[in-house]
Amino acid sequence: MVMKQKILVTGANGQLGKELRQLAENYPGYEFVFLGREDLPIHHFEMLRHYFGLYHPAFLINCAAYTAVDRAESEKDIAFQVNGEAVGVMAAVCKQFATKLIHISTDYVFDGKASQPYKESDAVNPQSVYGTSKLEGERQALLYNPETLIIRTSWVYSEYGKNFVKTMLKLMAEKDIIQVVNDQFGSPTYAADLAAVILHIIGSYKWEPGIYHYSNEGVISWFDFATEIAKYTGSKCKVNPIPTSAYPTPAKRPGWSVLDHQKIMEVYEIAVRPWKESLHACLKRLK
Ligand SMILES: NC(=O)c1ccc[n+]([C@@H]2O[C@H](COP(=O)([O-])OP(=O)(O)OC[C@H]3O[C@@H](n4cnc5c(N)ncnc54)[C@H](OP(=O)(O)O)[C@@H]3O)[C@@H](O)[C@H]2O)c1
Image 1 (cartoon, protein in one colour):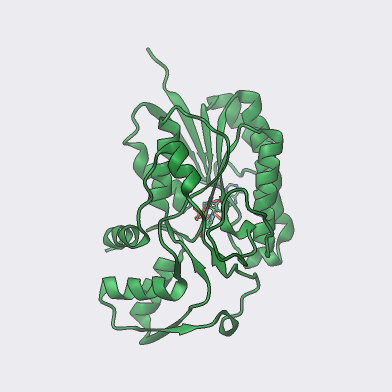
Image 2 (cartoon, rainbow, N blue to C red):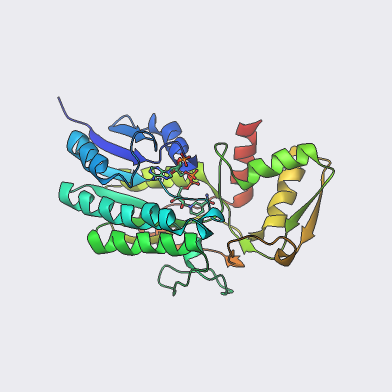
């Protein structure tokens, strides 16, 4: 009997992890092992090694992360432990077991002062504890295992967990008027599309390590995003634009969070879906 290659997914109960679960049934050639935080806290290094010894995975998709961007400003140690140190250990263990690691990072490694989409080779300069901790994860991953493949993404949403789309739907159902920031620009990413890209990479049998950028296609503000959600759902709630200065948050957000997709499109021959098409698909599933 041919042994199926195993794909270990950490942080399996987050947005991306749950989308991977949905898609896993389309990949019967692999055996998936989904581990949530309660099964495998990634900063618990002995448990990490235990699971590797148990499964000898061919691939590890690390969806686990400390993602509370504002809280990270006051919880620096835990943010760095999960997003930095644990990723380094994970990369080293992957190297030891010849496991291919796909790790997810963020647009927040940039300062948002550009006016062109960020390329993978552009200078990083995170403005928040979260962004700095994720950059540390990238650095450690490539240091301890140069074969790591890192995908930076932005503005992730899905029908699972907490995200902008679900927050907007809730507020629009409760209020007559909402105010949404109109001077931060980026590209949303439907977690289902990102999950499909990750599994496409694995299925391609082509492994070109390094950093890649991926989001849906298009450049919009959070206000544009909210306006389209209201339009598509037929909400009567009025969406008003406000500047970032009117909505202060503990962590500074980049004003320009647009990622250039050229590299991933060329290397892995993928098409990138327009943001509206993906948003509509998610809203349909949320109905
Ligand atoms: N969300 C975004 O807008 C966004 C933007 C750019 C990049 N990213 C990156 O994309 C990746 C996936 O994000 P996501 O939106 O799917 O995040 P998410 O929904 O917050 O999921 C992250 C998961 O990691 C788990 N986790 C936290 N600490 C852990 C630990 N020590 N050990 C094991 N699991 C732990 C969380 O568990 P609990 O639920 O129990 O806390 C959660 O289930 C992350 O690397 C994130 O940094 C996200």
